[in-house]
Amino acid sequence: MKAPTARARRDTMLLAAMTVAAAAVYSALSLLRLANFQASAYDLVIFDQAVRSYSRFGPPVAIVKGVHNDFGPAFSVLGDHFSPILALLAPLYWVADTSVTLLVAQAVLMALAAVPLWVFTRRAMGVAAAHLVAAAYLLSWPVVEAVAFDFHEVAFAPLAAAVMLERWQAGRKVHVVLAALALLAVKEDMGLLVAGFGLTLLTQRGWRALDGAHVAGAAPQARQRGWRVMGGCFLAGGLGFTWLASQVLIPAFGGRPDYYWAYGALGSTMTEAATTVLTQPLTALAQLGTPPVKLVTLGLLLGVTLLAACLSPVLLAAVPLLAERMLASAFPNWWVPEYHYNAFLVTVVFFAGVDGACRLRAVRRAGQARAVRRVWPVAVLVVAVVSVPFFSLATLADPATYQRDERERAAAEAVAAVPGGVRVEAPNNLAPALSAGNEVLLWDRTPRWAPWVIADTRRRVFPFKDVGEQQARVRFLLDHGYRVTFEKAGFTVLASSGPARS
Image 1 (cartoon, rainbow, N blue to C red):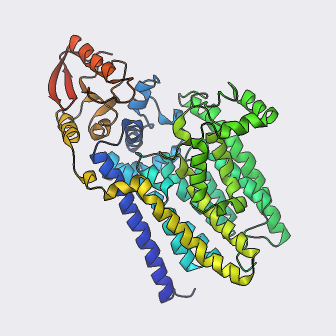
Image 2 (spheres, one colour; image 1 turned 90 degrees about the vertical axis):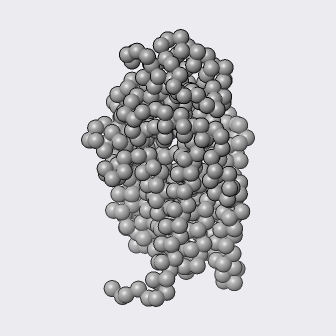
Image 3 (cartoon, helix red, strand yellow; image 1 turned 30 degrees about the vertical axis):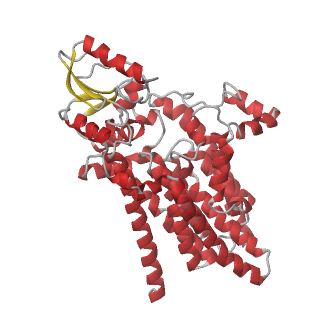
């Protein structure tokens, strides 16, 4: 094996520097939101409790989820989403038992996806393009919005998907299968992503380099058949796994198979919805753009590659997962640009964009091919940079981000007024600050009779209808044996005067 050249070492160091810098910036964004009480019980505390339970060699119990959603205090998050891969984070809690660990781990995992994307792009378009595309991914809004909204199992998806696609380009079937299995452990609907990649394998001979040479096995014929067989297995296996996880495994862990049914506009059951799609395709197409923000999100997602992804069969890998979200008529968070759902697909879109740009170059004259090679990666990075002010990363440039206002200072005092090691009901955005040393429940519309309660009577908080309902809840608690121990800027800390009720 030849020793790396000085140029190769410099390229590797630049990639490492970009990845480390991105992980640091993502961590800063997440941790500042946590410090400013912008993180939430739903979902940071849920994952914090689950991983802590794993770290103590128990099932991933999240009492905050189980109690609020009436599953019971011993509810395992595997009954909500089938994400056993979260157990890999448990050893980190032996070092630092805090939700900060999750946010930093997520930042690192998200940033690491740039490495296989860089390798893929270098083979296809050269080193300079690889740096530009990797930087565009690291600045891309789906990644930024994911790290800005608590922690989620999506942390593992970009890296696993990127490894699967890069290993396919390299022609390593065993590695592709292992990466696909890792994806299946991320969440029950990652089977749809694996199935979509199966479509890619079924419709493409093999990935070609720019000069027409076969990189991933377009020849000999037997190797082509091998990828097609794998494609068929991925298609069937991915769909089968999603059904198994959602209809069998999740109920086995105490969940409900219809808990996230979101397709009432198409039918009340999976059979009815499928019948509507097959017999009334125009109804299904209309649902893809209802409400119109779905089309905005889709346009923004494809826009990160200037639509070059649309030229590649790699984009087929994203279609089933996109259909799952865009055909829904419930859970509006699924189809907006905010939150974390687009991060499940952003690496697929970037890989498809690189492949699409290569295909565009393949049909042009040599001079035009060189122009595409130089212009497209630069343009993609420009798009990523221009988008920064419109998404959560821009908050790092706001001086107010680094200063607590009156409400935030009062929130910190309210949290400090609760002793450690107790059960406490807390508003959605204060709960993460208490999760490490207490048994935290969500302060909601049902009395839980915890010994300690923090209430917010100035701003509406999830899941109350309005501030008036929150104020009525405080009066109710005062009438039932609670006393005020702290009150400031709308935050009220109450302690029970008697034994906790069940």
